[in-house]
Length: 430
Image 1 (cartoon, helix red, strand yellow):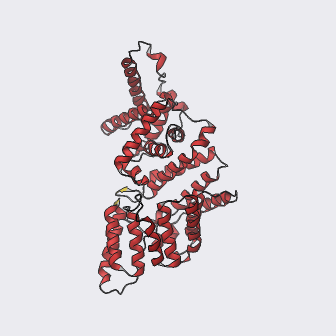
Image 2 (cartoon, helix red, strand yellow):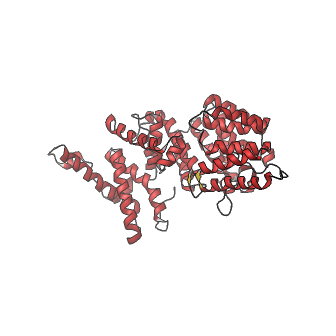
Image 3 (cartoon, one colour):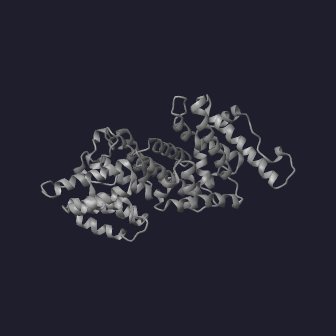
């Protein structure tokens, strides 16, 4: 994440600074829940004042100062509530001048916050949800979508996570090297989900959120610097680089979605592909193969194909079969169905999807309908294809995806009566 500048739109600046400021305040006061509230109040104050008065010369220091003052008020209020007539200086952390705070603070406060949020008092799902909120800046709705649960359920989960940290008595502080190792699975999952939301935004008018994807890559690089021998950390970074390499080709001039098989591959970032491939080769040579390494291998096979027809689908199918053994899940099954269809035909792919019909995590997800639409189209069953394209469009909350799916339905409607057009574009999982 780049250093903030006054020229940056202040809304984006606030989004960038929020996790950095929260990391500082939470570490200094060791109360995550109250620190998050204090930082939110500081952000609201900035949102009200900066448009009117201008962005301050040191916006990060301004936010730290306002949030720290709010934390001081919270400490004093707590002391009064408990009727402790003690000197405030004995129980609250000293508030150093902002200049001193800035002198010892760097951008890795976000990385520290990442590990802090994966707290031992929390289950891994709760830790991930809390971290996505604090570090990734995702909304509750976006986090719920990533977990395939209702928004209300996720809101309760995040609230309980904060309560669990407070009740545990375990200090909210930077973890030791051993604690970093223990919290690593949750940290990697968080980074994966932040990147996924940045690469394919679940909500809104834009297909991608470059800020989230870039921050996920930066934090994963930082995590690898902490744990350079961990194969899965390197595998996750390889996956991000190999996937992000296709970013410029995924949207057209108006921000419209361009599916994988129609992308201009000359726009793919060959530097990122080379770096990701080298990382993947290094991790695979260590003999252990995990979830992120296998997904990176799938991305590498796609990136190696000069043209869509050159894609080694049998190899991709074999990788998804391994993924089903290493980390089975509905999204793996969904992606595997596409590979099955590309190797054995669309009918076999549709049969493979039946396993998801009773899976509550995915049965109402738009991607299931989108893949079904694509496979029915390949079969020449335009009526079912149109129906599933429309259902998928109604279920997605991302406008470019919605527009793409409705366009596919309209295209098939026009050609359905004559049936003189072959299968059109594909909705391959990218």
